[in-house]
Length: 163
Image (cartoon, rainbow, N blue to C red):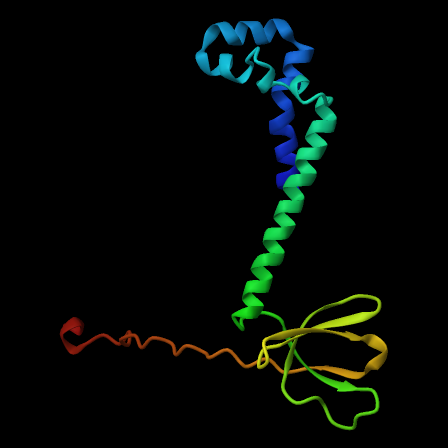
């Protein structure tokens, strides 16, 4: 969200300055070639080319940026689940069954009507209606191995150091 707001400021700053203070823009353009490029008279470098008002154009750009970010997040999460590094392991007991379904599923998410599961052994995704699930139990996560502390020489002075 912060990056989206920053993007709006960066995209809107040149056009805002151009509209509010044209004399300052003219002085900047006369000073350096970089300012001439930023405040170019070309229709490609201002919002009038698009036919949109600057605020509308910035809002569209921020929405596209946020949608792209959400898609990248979803893709990276999906890749982690496929690699076996993500997702919450669960056991599923269906309504009318006494025992859990064989194997462990990964919980992808849920909606008001479905629970979305990934079965790694079969490499398939499944949408199970919530009404057909009797129990959905989270599996304990494996404990992380504790690295042994490095052995350090003792701080006892040696006989040579005492003299």
